[in-house]
Image (cartoon, rainbow, N blue to C red; front, side, top):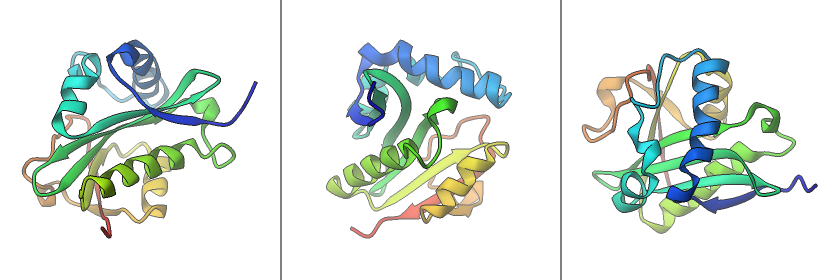
Length: 165
């Protein structure tokens, strides 16, 4: 067994594996009141992410999908980060999976001239807040988000990051 994470782009063939990571973290681990029905993007990665100018990545260890991150391109050279999740047993600085996923997304943004990133999260995800802030994200109010930002009903904390392209 290797513990070296491999980051790669994901397509529709990974939808079930993506759902198997995200829903239990949302619903069971953090009791976020969200369903698969309220996240239809998870059933068609290619239409909702690839075809919008964004992308969807996964972290794999020994061919097992253990983490995800996605980007939706929005107006004005901006992007919305979505679906940043890492299985509990693979979290932490030892493997650095969340950092590898974010770094991959930022590299993609710089290649595509995306100069600002936005994301929404929920107040109970305290470790996620610390992670984003450590990576230079600053909190902003919902009213300060770009009008084209795709809001998720459960999100109540918002962040932005300006990239130096």
